[in-house]
Image (cartoon, rainbow, N blue to C red; front, side, top):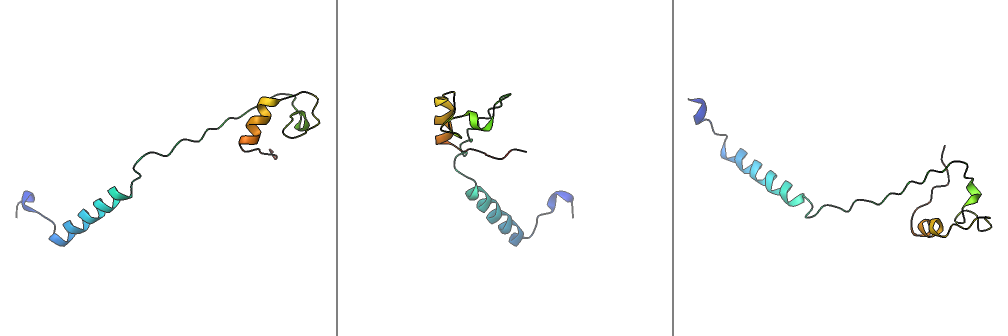
Amino acid sequence: MAPSDFRPPSSSRGFWRILLLTAALALPLHAADRPNILFILADDLGYGDLGCYNPEAKAPTPAIDKLAAQGMRFTDAH
């Protein structure tokens, strides 16, 4: 038997066809949206200096407060 004459049994071909079709149908039709991540790093900023963490903060931070209200806030960083 010549190397070019080798063909897998028909049941094996059917298995690979079904596997390929299943994998193609399992792929998402469109890519998922990437998350919007905003990381704010500030020097000498205390926990209570922002209005979103302390309503009695001395300096108003309306833009940061709005971002915090619409997103996620992390209170523990070590």
